[in-house]
Each structure stands twice: as C-alpha cells, then as structure tokens.
Image (tube, rainbow, N blue to C red; front, side):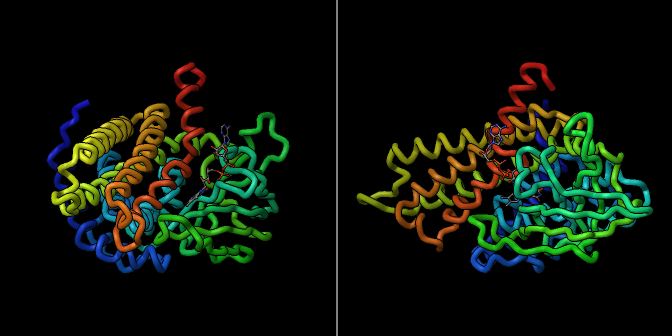
Length: 382
Ligand SMILES: Cc1cc2nc3c(=O)[nH]c(=O)nc-3n(C[C@H](O)[C@H](O)[C@H](O)COP(=O)(O)OP(=O)(O)OC[C@H]3O[C@@H](n4cnc5c(N)ncnc54)[C@H](O)[C@@H]3O)c2cc1C
C-alpha cells in the first residue's frame, strides 16, 4: 500500500479540517450540553458535499472512494464526535440499498438520502439481541401483498429524525440454520404503528439522535423488501467491514482531537515556573499518544484502501476498529490527565472527547466481538 495520500485526498482533508475547525468546533459544547441534533451544521456540510462521500454520483453522492469517506469521518470527528456522527450517520444503512436495492428503491430512497434531503438508519439491535444479531425476535408476517411487522428495536441512531429505516426482522421462525430467515425492510417512519422514543441520557456523542423503536402491526408493502428474503443476516455481514472501518476512522479523529487539545495545553500551562511540556513525563505521554494515533490511522487507512480496491477485508476492518477504539479511549484519558483538574471541567473540550471516545468500543460490534472475528479469520474459520 502506498501510504502517501493522493492530492485529491489531501485537498479533501484540508477542506473538511477547515470546516470542522471553523464551523463545528465553536458550537460543539452547546449541542453536547443541549443534546440537540445540529440541523444547521448539517446544512453547511451538505453544501460541501460531505453527506455521502463514497456513494456514486449517479445515486446522489460525491462519488469518491472509501478512503475518502474515512478521511471525511476522521476530520469531522476531530472537530467534534457528536456533530461528526450526526453528519456522517445520515446515510447509515445505505450500503444495503446500494448493494441489494432494486433500481426503483435506489432512486426513491437512496438518492434523497445521499443528497442530504432525507435521513435514514438501520434497525438491527433489540433489547435482548445485541451482539447476537441472529437472536432477534422482531417478526414480519406476510399477508397478501404486505408484511406485518411487530417487535422492539433499541439504540437506533437517527430513530426519531429518520424518514425511513432499514428494519431487520424474522420472516422464517423455524429456519434450518439460525442465521437464516431474517429479512430487511424499508420502513417509512410515518407508517401507522411506528413509534420512536428518544434516548436522551447518553454519556457521549450527545448531538446525535438515538431512539427505541416499537413496531405495532406496521404494514409494509412486499416491494419494500431489500435483497433476498431470509438472507438479510448474510447481506449485513458483507457490510460490517465498511461500518467498522468507519468507526475506526471516528476513533482516529477522536484521538487526534483529544491529542490536539493536550498538545496545546501542555505548552501553555505553567507549573514550577515553566510549561508542563518541558517535563519529560509529559513529553513521554505526548510521544506515546502521537505514536499510537499514527499506528491506528495506518491500520484504518489500510482497511479503507482495501475496501476502495473492491475488497471486503473482515479481519483488517476488525483490527482497525479494535485498535483505533482502544487508542481513542486511552489517548483521551491521557489528554485529560495532561489537563490536570481543568480536564475535569466541561469548559475544556477534552472532557467531551473523553466521554465520546467510549462509544467506539461498543457500536458496530464490541471489542470482544472484533477479537472473535480476528481470531476466526486467523484460524481460517471465516
Ligand atoms: C450510541 C449507540 C448507537 C447505536 N446505533 C445503532 C444503530 O443505529 N442500529 C443498531 O441496530 N444498533 C445500534 N447500536 C447498538 C450496538 O450495536 C449494540 O449496543 C452493540 O452491538 C452491543 O450490543 P448490546 O448492547 O446488546 O451488548 P451485549 O451483546 O449484551 O454485550 C454485553 C457484553 O457482553 C459481551 N459479549 C456478548 N457476546 C459475547 C461473546 N460471544 N463473546 C464475548 N463477549 C461477548 C460484549 O462484548 C459486551 O461486553 C447502538 C448503540 C449505541 C450505544
């Protein structure tokens, strides 16, 4: 792999960095405090074409490669993780449409999302089925030209603001193998029986939207099925690599954002008559942090580059996510430590990075699940 970014990638990075510094960072504290979705900032991101970097132009996106998408995510999260997620997750679940949707579904649903005019999400997790996706209980029963959906989904990003969700539900209740029998549906959020309850009391990424979804006899036309009936678990597995590299890029951005704050503070804060950056203990922290971030970035870029080449690198994506999310948590912790007591006060952005870092070890598969995937890949079991 050529580790030198192309001129286009460098220009993109510069543009997004400027946007993050000038437009996102100044309002980050307010949106975090109020746990409010940043519609105004999203409008600005839309103008710069940052909603769907890697969706082809013919479907409303910017038509860049997946490495470009990783760079956009990294820089947005470096500005602020909550607002970064609010912007970058508006297309969450779009891979399902892009890969398995009919041309009609792509035109009707994918295009307005990629253009930033509509919002989507993916509803997989249930109160009793998180890591064990195949354990889901939401049911979809066929009645003529419709399916009737019943069940509860939880932790659904964009749940209260989405125009539609890709909902995963069981259509075969007695399959030969437990991963079979799950089907994906496009469910418009204004359908009767669709209820979204906001989950507001989040530890971090508070500017992004999260909800619990209840489906009560929600009627969905058969034409809203995405992909092959009963095969949605396998469809989903094809995209997890992309989602995981996206989260790895989030983690790199968070780590870099926290580092930037600590680096600046260490040179400004005076103790014992000199900047604390003069103390070797602080210098060693900064050196370790910068090294870990660079390693996480290289793992992430490599996995993103493999996807850009048309690959589906399950092992590399899990390695990037596992490592980068650990680095995000550890670097944010050290960055806060360098701030001393001031790091514990909300006025300093480092406190937000510290809270925001944790989510990267949880969603798109926890760190334990990433280890399972890496181990299985090493043993030749996937
Ligand atoms: C802010 C946020 C946003 C999210 N957005 C979405 C979304 O948009 N759509 C969606 O569908 N979901 C979403 N999720 C859900 C997220 O993907 C799940 O929370 C995650 O997959 C873990 O599931 P769980 O919370 O049920 O934990 P559990 O699966 O109950 O895990 C609990 C603990 O047990 C461990 N564990 C579980 N199984 C194993 C095993 N086999 N081996 C070893 N350890 C194991 C886990 O690693 C974890 O430490 C979101 C979650 C959050 C918090």
